Image: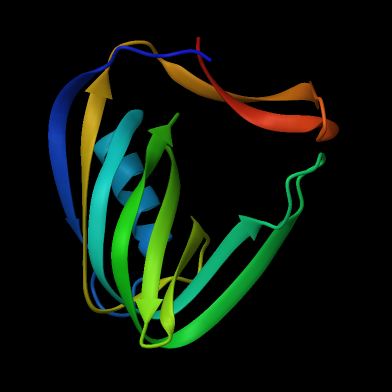
Length: 149
């Protein structure tokens, strides 16, 4: 376990317009604004289509499942980090059938409304590295590890 002490610099509020890809819009905004690292504090709205991935079991190596859907989909929650100008966003979605979520992939198209708020941060410069792990009961593999430079 490792923790990082960071300071909020600027709050950004993004409006993603109908038909725009949410992840591409966030990535474009981050890069145009020169944001190197930020905390995605939240987001809400609706999607016309979604594309997510999630892990399917608790053994090494991890296995990802990808899923897509369309129709009126509510965004209940959104959070994550921007590290080295690269957004990593998780989202909770809902339809009348229930709620589900996962890691946001390209293909999440805004529908009626989509607003995201994130805090640009100062402090240690963070990065993500792939590191080998050997976890008793889970096995050997590699995972993404958040570190400071």
